[in-house]
Amino acid sequence: MNENAYGPSESVKATMRESLSLVNRYPDSADALVGEIASLHAVKPEQVVVGCGSIEILRMAAATFLGRSKKLIMASPTFDPIAEYARRAGAAVATVRLTTQYAHDLDAMLAHVDASVGLVYICNPNNPTGSLTPRRDLETFIRRLPSATRVLVDEAYHHYAGTSSAYASFIDRPVDDGRVIVTRTLSNVYGLAGLRLGYAIAAPGPARQLSSIRPPMDVNVLALRCGATALRDSDHVSLSVQRNANDRQEFYNQANARMLRVIDSHANFVMLNTGGPAEEAIDHLKKHNILVAPPIPSMKRYIRVSLGKPQEMLEFWRVWDLMPHRKMQM
Ligand SMILES: Cc1ncc(COP(=O)(O)O)c(C=O)c1O
Image (cartoon, rainbow, N blue to C red):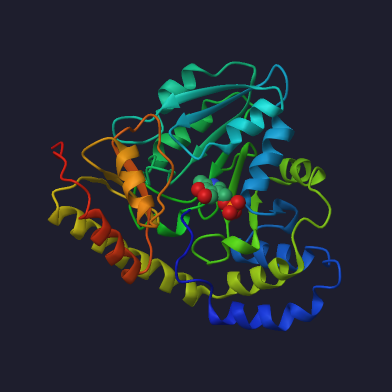
């Protein structure tokens, strides 16, 4: 599930141990953590919304900006829980296939835009493909959206995106546009998936709207404290990114050695063309206790593999090699 196999930093573990004595108490307000996030990104605290994982913020965005007679536009395949949140809010959902380069097809998405579009969801880098949508294209796209339409840019895999000129975070290099909401998570690079912490950066207006439906005390006492420590520990972020780059390169090497194709990944997982029905590969791996993502209906030959530690990946390839030979598609 795209977690960081190496876990959190030592400083986070120390904070966790120190905070254990607080778990009989309800959490403090999130103000200290919000202040930490605001200073990390040089924004005002009123631009920060915290959530119990960034998935909670996706849910809040669907509940706030969608409803009956509204529409969500999103890609396919992408990280799709927001589609279910939109439907629950009574909204219509328009899905648009990624381009052949696995970028969001922004022209086709624009073709779905009308006055009913409350929200556009852009996942960049995209899950499950690990691919980028060029920054310049996104800027043009956003400029063309109606004034009442919000666009949520999910940057869950931001740290792994690398230094490609095609990519820039909408937090680090914001556009002067109050319609853009950016989400981040502490689940992957920070190694804290089990603590459940994510956040959004938005203009004060939409941030206030989102926060107004935040359940009280959703962020637990350990997440509040450990999250703040994690965000301060930039060395651990660099280490996680470097390890991921090494592990990803080794994955490519192993795939190449077997003449398997992959989609170039800007994330901590890789889409691997299995050369046959994805379900068969998934079942085979599962029989040997290796779990990969569920099948992706529109990519019938691909499986999404989250990168594990080197030892775990050796086991992945050992089990892979036990699979009956399949003819690879070149
Ligand atoms: C693109 C994307 N956004 C959000 C999430 C949810 O992250 P969190 O653990 O912060 O809820 C995930 C988790 O897999 C993801 O892939």
